[in-house]
Length: 318
Image (cartoon, rainbow, N blue to C red):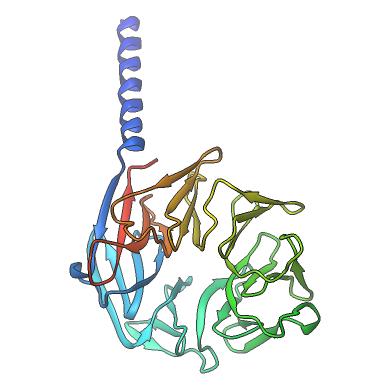
């Protein structure tokens, strides 16, 4: 009897292993196109909540995807380029050409008239909102009542005025700022500029991301991705030297890289950098990445839809 149980156990383990291997080698892609019910053709950003919903920012508002069903939250005056959902389930929608708005209790509100031309939203560990503005040499800080603009000091900004492209908070509460000129950090008191490229500062920083090991990944416009362990900078030569648009870390620790301008989609499993060359990435162009609570990975990139960009979901890849 024990021998039979052992045999059954071995067979069960083998079946589970085969299924897992099949999921790895045969992931399932689901494509969403404009015709499926989006508000407009061009999709700008992604956000996932804890309830399995995925939010897609676009011209004219947001589309919510839940269990394959699309529901639109329309605001014709809004161009949603970034989304954040707070603890009260209020949806913050950044507009890089107009005022930031919040969707709450089925209504759109403007929290503060000084929150305008915002391209990115993050919330720090001390529950303060930080914004990357569509302006020069400054961050925007918002505590829920007061808007404060924090300028990069002229003493460390040789450009005399540089566009902010991306922001990230690390595990120490330091805000990292990628600009058209260089990478900066702000610890709440002091600013620093980082010279990780020999003999030159002036390089546009397109993406900054901290992984769960505390390493900082930096996408340099048309140069290699850099990695910073707190002491040393390393060039990641395995990745494309083109515009890194976004990064995401999945729950199993894998890192995902989305590149524009021919860079494709890549995954790093801790050992190997793995490219994805799927049909939906016709333009070899990714603009945003997120993971939903069911484990699926979501990507915005040009699709076969002739009217604009499409959305893809990858499941069963782990």
